[in-house]
Length: 507
Image (cartoon, rainbow, N blue to C red; front, side, top):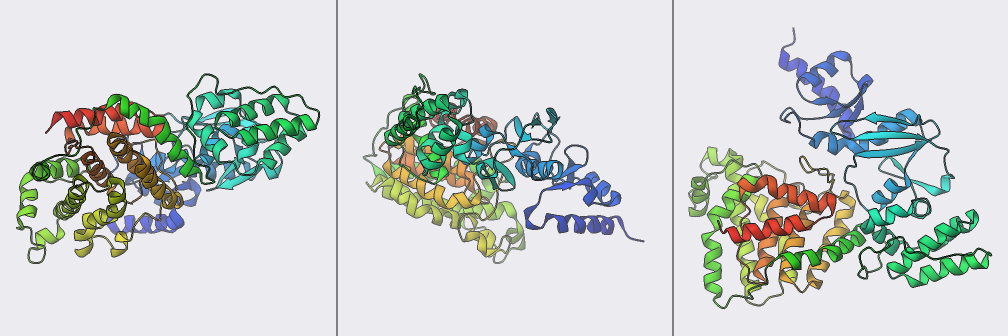
């Protein structure tokens, strides 16, 4: 007779087959009742609604939103495909948000389908899906991404109400600045004789600095004998800075967020003291904070490290070559990696306070910081050597956050764009605060993002003569909440004030 462990192993083997190619969402009927009940009981599956399950982990605590938020968009795609076949698409508003690389989980997603029932399906953690009965638009107006059927940007722009431009200023700006082919948009406006929409869209393009597009829309409509009264859908909203024209949405999004947030940083952060006259004293203060910084930074990430362990690592008493306990100790490996990375960051700080270009130095060095952080774990065989190759090649999710980091394909454009923004920014406080937040927003690595973000912040703080700042583990919840407000709510002020408070606390 099979043991309990053997039975669970058999059920896990069935789950593994279904999880190939990264699947996290399943129909209940894909499992036998025995396997399904066993996997649910042991925490490897979680129910969503009747007939639907998602992957989970036994160590996930009740109330942890991470498995659901990580599965949300995949669930929407699979559920709609199962229920509506190919006859469905997301609303024009949600389509535009996804085209603008806004992947945060909404409280409600609206799905259009001729098979819809005008019904709300309640989903976990306060989310829902509303199926609106609606005829399908022409196929040419739709596209598909990651299994989600969306309006193409031009088709969505002519369908969203004026309120969208005021409610989602940043996303609208990104889409308008990045739209390359205006002919599709013009065709939709002309074929429908949509004079009111044409006036609104022309006014929106003019507001973001694309005068040529606005003039073309008005001229084309008038040539077809349509009278157009141009309006500004953004009303008395913010004054936009000029975005660099780019066809890459994630780049435009980073540019727009930076432009909209830098003013809040400057208004809520102290003036920079200037590069230190006594560089040796500044570096000595950094060295003095190493133990405290390592303890708090590693503890924030969930490592159980003590100051004694950190001192063993610093003094060289940590000996994985001869001590089996050190070789296998995950926390000791993390502490050693932090020590190595800290030394690499210190070299960057020394170059920065000696007058080096901070953003260029950080661009060149951040990969080395990352490799030092994980080299001990690779050497011990805990993680594969390929982990040191660079940016991630898969999806990644942030525990308990509604923010879903950009698709891994976008990371290769996002990170160079971030460093371009850092190099173009004259204010040290803006570089440090927005640089820290955006590393977490992009989440370019599978692991280590928080530690690298804090290293980057401190290297860039040094460029203004600000002190090395420790984010304390006892303020972990406030720290993550402030980051979430920036990533989901596009409100940076709480994070600016949080960093300022941590800097002034001086652990």
